[in-house]
Length: 592
Ligand SMILES: [Zn+2]
Image 1 (cartoon, rainbow, N blue to C red):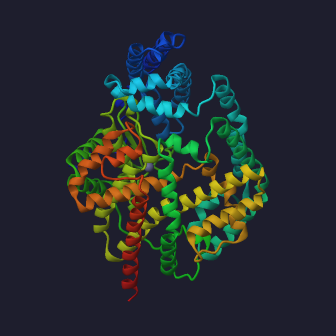
Image 2 (image 1 turned 120 degrees about the vertical axis):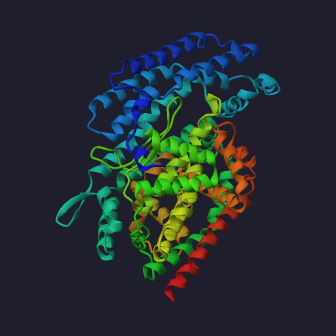
Image 3 (image 1 turned 90 degrees about the vertical axis):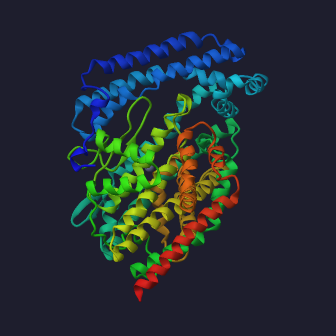
């Protein structure tokens, strides 16, 4: 491929001609009409919940309606425009207008899955035995599974209305308090987020000093987090008890469409294997030349990689990697780089970081902020994993095109690993070891602290639920207890380090970070299987095409990965441990 054929800015004309293209409003109107028609036909008359022939007809109608109302095109266009230019006020207001109108219309459709959930057990059995419903089977059965925990329409309405003041307004208040805090640094006042960015880049003494100020500030304002967490945990307990959900994490796992036992055996396997993380952290301390690790030593780079990866060079590396793995992947990638579906370089007004934007009825787009660093090429690999997963799931019927939170990061991590294997070949010997170290840090950090956080949350909820409340001081002690369980004695926490819970946003959304550990371990297993046998790519493709057509357990079981067996997670962890052993050998060799 010639360099000149690469497009490095998004071509959004694949969606609409311009922000004033009348087709945008026409598409929004089509969505409104389709929702209104469907609602008119089915919301008042629910005979389809008792009659199989009418049910099949209603399901077909629903699917047809979704092909219109599921389109993310009118919203995506202004949203993508705004993401590459925050000063584009026209795009911003168009986006708000479309979002308002579409959300209002979609609310008219919510009654349908709720009504389907109420279908009685004898009819459920008859539907499950009828091959005409095969296509809808997983859709219906997951609704029925969730319906067991749904309450009467009136109660659901009250719960939905009160979730704003009982949960989100607390969380927003906490975020606001945090954003207003400043600490002194070099004769200036800086915000806590500025301090987080600065800390890993500072020399040891300075970063320890700044960290101390952050911690003291968090402790000082922890009175609000104490009230907030006690309130939102108590609110959750009320809803869970009403619904009959027995464990603090039950609702989250139900949402993942996973089996509770799978997640429990994942948590158990990782917790039992915290010594793997201890070994990794000891090696980290050794390489940095420290006897003990301070909390701020966890995020500092262990060395500098000078090798540059330009975008053109990286495209060639990724093409080569993908062509060896699967011609289909290479083809999809080629289309992305030549069609203007990757916005590559940073510029003023463009959003930070990287993401993959996919949706129904639109081409997938990737946003990057290229810097020629190793991180740039592995990020492109990561986002391409999301993109290829999304593209391949498009073969599913509309009900199953998406995928659940717990499998969201499987393909992206897998592709990152594929690309990394080629990247490493491009580096000189002394940079190789740094890159391998950072790579391993990523996987260790995705697995162990996330499970430690799960254990913290579980104990936080159980304590508040049984004793009624918990003080900020006790929350800080609990945080230190679970964090030092995963780090081992090499890391020294002081009492005030426990106050990091004050600004750990994830715990406000209950248990979901465990999905990162789940995705990482499954992608490790897929990677190893493919390494042993390249024809395993057929099975990987089977997963990539599966979308949301079954539970994660069944999708993976069909390709030889039984996540319901605790040994599965133990084996995947062993493979991480082997990588640590290899790295220990490399470090020892370098020292000689
Ligand atoms: Zn991702």
